[in-house]
Image (cartoon, rainbow, N blue to C red; front, side):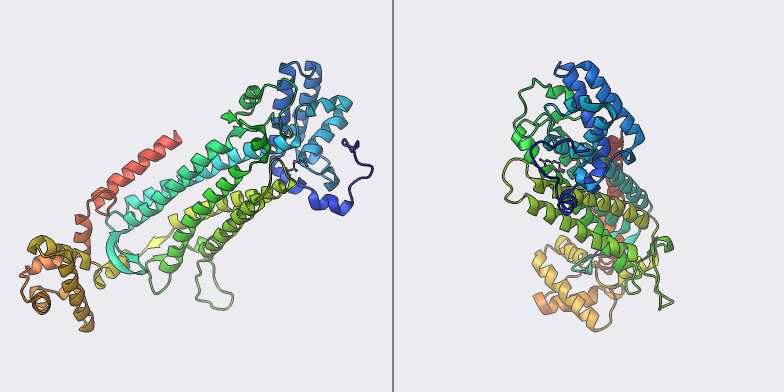
Length: 468
Ligand code: ARG
């Protein structure tokens, strides 16, 4: 049924219609569109703009449509979009009186409203999934506050830490990803309805009422801006990109650390793949796909940003092309969070290997330099030089950290500063012990088991607050 047959003599060409139709990705806003129409008609009747009796007929038909589902609609591309499909349905059911439903409304404000309504729900879901993930990470961290491992910078052994401390790095990044989304949510949750095509309408509509009926937090204060803007979509996709980047980082570590060379952890079979030719293989495919899907998200952000570039006010059909990219970003990131959550939660950690790595390659050297500063009042730069030279000699002569004593250190100190340090063997050995290193790092944010336990408690309190 063609309900817009006034201006044009001919129907749109078939190819042109399917080229321009948004019906496929509008399916996602079907229910929101019906709700938007119901709220709008309720308001029109409440304000005496249309007869209550007409509004009731329209609303009853919309309620029926909601029950019948999207299958009840004619989704031929020539219908153009979901808004036309819904209006055509109501017209078919109740006749010309349906024509009142588009009073004081345009598809321009309607589509912006529908997108925001759906996105609000999607963000809530993703937020919930992130909190679930943080919760699992905290559960894991609780059992690993004493699990010593080496931390990396430049992917080289840097300093000892614990697996719990490392897990809390994930939790903190995810917390920011969550907070970023929560902040964007405030700007998504605004009502553009009533802006009509771009300048509102001469009918005396009540925008506060539709805002309340649709559950938005507030209404958009400029009608031109309301129909033109999609920054709410762009910033949500950016938030999802940052989230994906956090997930990709986690995956990168799972991939590296599950290799034979690192041998730190094993990904569960359920989240692994094998090779069609090499019978021995256990591959981290899920982590790899997640890493790659991060690029898909970045691509969606670039697409959205580029569509927005140089668009004049107000509505331009270009805006329609943003929609499928928004949904793809939402779906992709949602699946990524849930996969990485499950994958991380089911890994097996090799504590002995972690400890060996932390013990064997002078990751405790910083602490020895610090001890020299504290005990002997030597400037840090001098201590740094002595320990650096000591490590060089030790590595050249196959001397392990456990074998370093006062004599060895003093030979180097004599060479460099012309005097002995006279540090006791026990003090040197304590400084070179990874676990002792960890116990001493009690500063807020650090790896000492007690510090990490308070950090876990703080994050748990944050989860409680957000989930209440
Ligand atoms: N399908 C359109 C979109 O997604 C709805 C608005 C169409 N408005 C118009 N003036 N053609 O943006």
